[in-house]
Length: 244
Ligand SMILES: C[S@@+](CC[C@H](N)C(=O)[O-])C[C@H]1O[C@@H](n2cnc3c(N)ncnc32)[C@H](O)[C@@H]1O
Image (cartoon, rainbow, N blue to C red; front, side):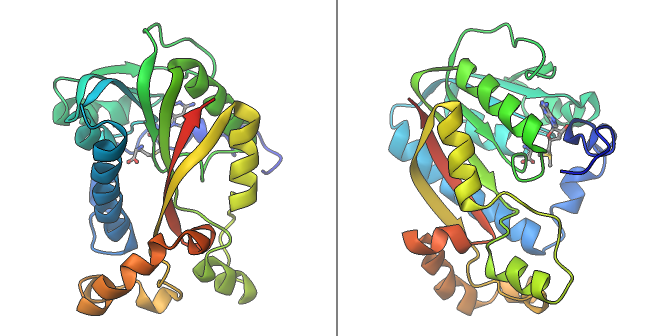
């Protein structure tokens, strides 16, 4: 991705975004809609894969603690890791029981015992390949054998929305397709055991409006996204991968 390693290193993307990040995701647009659906899916995953609670949990690239806060409620012990002290400052306010570590685990060790669950949201889709591989290796090393890695890809190039944008010359620079994602996971020692699509029906930018997301029709259409053959074409999806 790109030729300038500094300009394209996702490690530097959120060093100063802590103050604005949560507000930017709560404007009532598709970002807010994804957050709400991801939250529901995470509750389902916790109930299905950890019915007795999560012994040890880590949120990788935790940012302001958006996901940490929700999942740590099910965990006996929880950790959040991010390279941005500025983002983590916000997370600490939300999750007083969680231990936060400001560190790049692709370069330094976390220095903690293995965990049963790692989450990572809004990270893999944006990161460059070198960082994706480094992060997946670090996450694999952090998990107990058979442990779970739950993450999302909200930048799917195969979504109908992104495909139409590309055809009209307005496409975003996104490259984490379903096949590429599966290959990266396989190479890192994971197998996908569950996937949950979000927002299959969002085929045009015109639909990205708060009143659309609140409409009864969307409530009827959303379950279609969970139909397994459609997941590779959803604009966002949550995956459960297991360390093999
Ligand atoms: C878009 S934010 C996502 C935050 C949070 N996971 C969420 O879903 O709201 C991406 C985060 O990845 C972090 N990040 C980038 N490279 C990282 C790395 N090597 N290790 C840990 N965090 C990293 C950034 O600092 C930023 O906080």
